[in-house]
Length: 207
Image 1 (cartoon, rainbow, N blue to C red):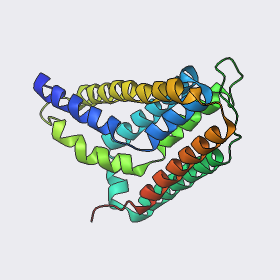
Image 2: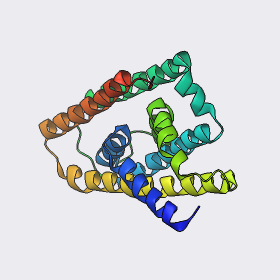
Image 3: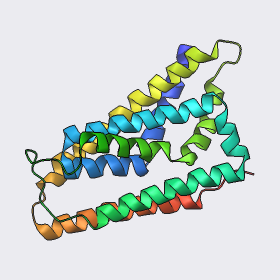
Image 4: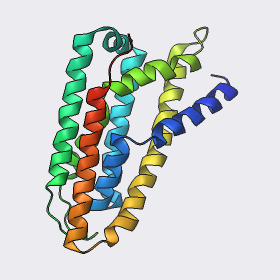
């Protein structure tokens, strides 16, 4: 991949990561409730989900999701259900002040898996990668190194952006101590998760 092409993809990768979505909501939610360090565990899981999405596109399975209504809808509605479930759990979470030295609400492995599922269960990302990635691929050159460069770039940029979201939530929102403030924050994040699920439900394959 030529340097100029790669730099263009870096810009695209940052735009993709910065755009509001379920990943940003999840990173901020964990940052607020469990602190920045635990949020990094969830963000690492998100990157594994992101890598899986790109792998799906690279091996051609993304074309199946783009072409098959049944396959697309099965994955889409699984993703919708998961986001709505996350939103409901957040919405009804106990209004309890966050203490950085307190025991985390969920284990590291559960947080990692939640982050993984947030990205892995979103067929919209697969379709999006199918539209965005191919223009940066030079078919005359070996494909594997190019896809590895793209994967590394996407993961690195998403790590930076999601870490920023989580740090913002951990540093700013953790200062909230009043139960009614925390209750409304939990409800706000819960509503955002469910809204992300609604947007995913409304997403349709291009004809």
